[in-house]
Image (cartoon, rainbow, N blue to C red; front, side, top):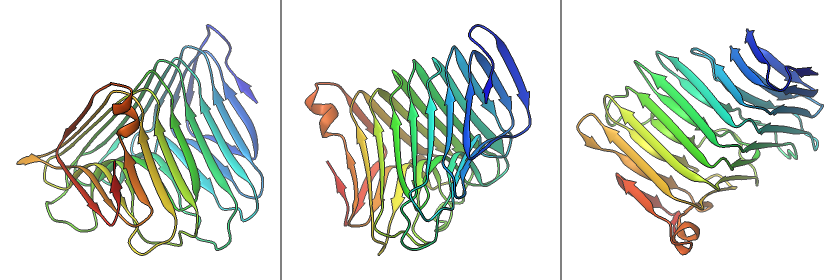
Length: 273
């Protein structure tokens, strides 16, 4: 299914759902609702091209990705418009890009999400609770931020010291069945992650595996700024925990570009390079 064409403006209201098969958006496209891409026994593909894609989802996730399959079934999302803006806002439990768990054992299903173009902007705002820009579930997932510039802006309001709730740019928590699978996130253009909590628990990156198997690797390959701020001062720019967890800045530094970290860095049995 193809919606829109080059140079045309398309406004869609309500959920856009891809459940097996493929959907493409072209031109200047606005979705006032959620983009839901799911694979339940059959692979799904979503592609955007043209000048712009704007998703304003309210309190729903702007993009929700579900894959409940056991076999080798894939969700593939290609955001190729020149400008991509994904926005979610509400009171609590806000996630702009939400990749759900697949809790079944022996899973070979997967998700692939690619961003290209000039600008990717992801915004999540919660007035009374936790918010996350990108939350990654327990399933093999590759996310490539390949736009010239990517910004993830998150605002929330969590009580300092609350173990269960975080305000985070990128989030993956322990719990549920993980299995021996990998999450790979790469920023191949300029990256800016800006997180603010009106209370506490602000994290640029929060990844906690605990005793689970599996790996989460996040690579920054160009100019990078990570800024995490609580109401009373700096938060955790990077908090990672678990044997298979790593955040890599060294590739960016080798190219002679800049990495600015504003906030603390904590690596518990994990690696920051």
